[in-house]
Amino acid sequence: MLRFRPLWKFTALMLPLFLGCLALGLWQLERLQWKLALIAQVNRNLHAAPIPIDQALAMTAAAAQYRRVEMRGQFDNSKEAYVFAAAGQGLAVYHVLTPFVLDDGRVLLVDRGIVPERLRDPQMRPAGQRSGEQHILGVWRIPDSPGWFTPAPNLARRIWYARDVKGMAKADDVRLAAPVIVEADATPNTGGWPKGGQTVVTFRNEHLQYAITWFGLAAVVLGGWIAFHISRGRFGARNPS
Image 1 (cartoon, rainbow, N blue to C red):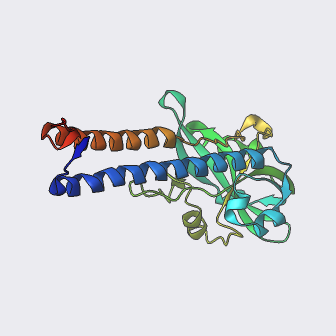
Image 2 (cartoon, rainbow, N blue to C red):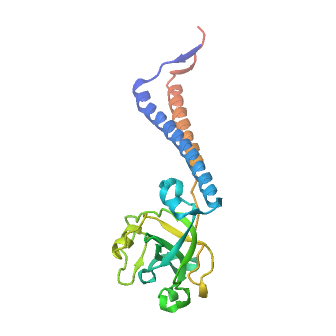
Image 3 (cartoon, rainbow, N blue to C red):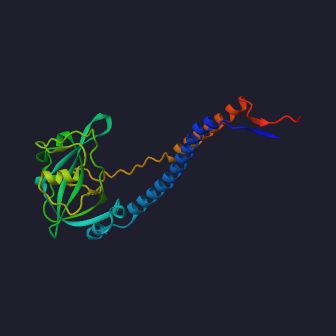
């Protein structure tokens, strides 16, 4: 016969740990399914045909994210902003963000691509300052907000360290149609700069590993609880008398 006489104080200590580990493991499995669905949606959006900008503006933020859009209008090159980024071998590059005025007067912010430090000044790349009516193809992005440790922008040099859409709009007294960035595609600019097509799609997906870790910890807690009771002669087979 099986003998089982639990130590209730010890059990009261271990049970929350066991249940907590199980709950966190199940939560990570839910996050895994959410992440897989997100990746699938992004891939569908990136491979779908471009949509008119009015359609993107009418969609929810989540539905429009990573959709390819097309629009017509003109760049306001006088209000370029530069977002610092690190390239390979520790070299600095800057994303050139420029207000784009649609034909009806609404304004969106376009990430035209990157330039090296030596070409940050637009006077060093005059051929790339596109003027007149433009047809833009790009990817609709909702950028991440600046973090706690993001350096403050250098407004005098128009250098930012995050794509702070609202901050840039406020600094230039620009009213945006939506707090988003349209990342221009790789269509070459005259003179070769800025270089568009800088959209990066990377998603960390380690939820399965996290789930396995939490379930493993739950097993360790359960095993420790059982081993403790066995060591105290409170769990195991009863010798027949």
